[in-house]
Length: 390
Image 1 (tube, one colour):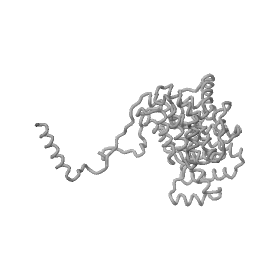
Image 2: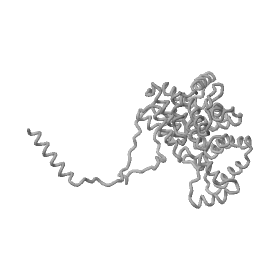
Image 3: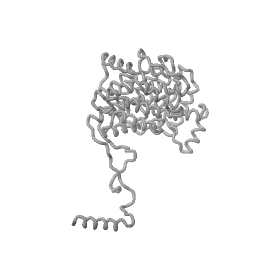
């Protein structure tokens, strides 16, 4: 059978379903959220507006946005059960394990967890949207030996996220750069974690299970860990003058250099210019020409030699580093953002559900039998006939 079937490893090029959530417009090389280029949304809309757009299909008017943000702000405080779980986990727990477990605990305390009514899904999603920043902030502060900082309802989503993490209100340039990053990471069609959430949803499992599964997929370094890897690369290189010899050795060893290349974008990741501009404001704000020089040198040298361009993870990694996040918390931030897209796809999957169950081409041994099985089968058949005759 395998001789007549085309196998697409990693489902590359396979169109699994329709979606109205997002697409990459090849003509303009733009990522579109519900039809809007993401660079326009990042420039002119706040992250809360983008989340509303992904969940409802259109941008909110003033009253809709006010209602949405008021509900989100009212749900930011963590359930004591979630706090107890955060305190009970070992200090060595991977930050993504912390986030994954927190979602499970939130779901376990939801008496309506199994409901798949559209309004119920959005209600659950809004709670997670409001509380994941608190989980990430709590985990990083615990890792640093610091006391948690309570959320504030007078701050917007991104400002509150940074407030809970660092215990001070961010400067506007920092808040703005962080908000841009959250918008850019919010959605990207049928990526690995999103497709995972749709597979789980297709079984008619509950919303929280779909999100937990998506978090598990995002934890994998080939999906969600690239911006962390960028900072490890920078630490290994040290400074701009070391880029050429480092890259010589890395390419000679055929190392995979994270932060460059993308399966979908062939002419460069359309999100990069927007995040690159935001990163530039942070280089200036924090006075880090050394890091900028390293960033520019590696990008220039790598693109010149390979023709492969940066993806979103390349500028977002140093941006999160400059803001003050520990490197291992970059992917949990990604999860807090991508919750927006996961939820939109859970909604869409449920609206016209079909169990996702692909076929496989078997390449194992041909049919074979255990020694003595046929004799035993014949004996059993004879005994059965004798019983029936009685």
